[in-house]
Structures are given as C-alpha cells and as structure tokens.
Image (cartoon, rainbow, N blue to C red; front, side, top):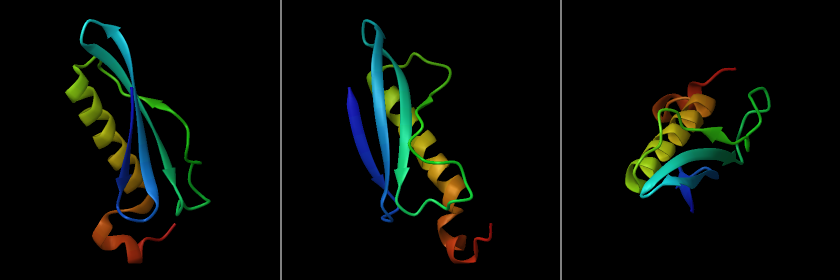
Length: 87
C-alpha cells in the first residue's frame, strides 16, 4: 500500500509504503522527495524504515507521515525560521 503526502508547499513529498506482516498489521517506511533540498545535506529519495512496528494500518500511515515531516523540517529548518536558515 502506498500513499503520497505533500508537505510545506515547497515541492516536498513524503512517499509512504506499508508492507503487511500479519493480519491487519504493517511495517511502514517512507522516503522524501524535495525540490528545494539543500545540496549540502543528504540526498532525498532514500527509503527509511519506521522503527518499533508493526503497526495497525492507521498508525503505520501516521507514524511514517510524522517521521517524513520531521525529516523535511530537519532539512529545511523550522517553518518560521526558514529565511534565516544558514548551512
């Protein structure tokens, strides 16, 4: 199962994948694609597994989305300080 979430309106997307592990339980992973990723930081697009699974379907999507949002925030800095972000 796959889902794509747009985040921060700057060309960033979180791609979430779920893999069934047992009845109604899933392992989750995500990857981030971001058009504005600074070149000095890690390249986007690498798949990252979400730890401490498996999860129910809803929790798996939620955990992967939040982890992806945190990864984007880590790359770009907090939304309100973005203009002051220095690498």
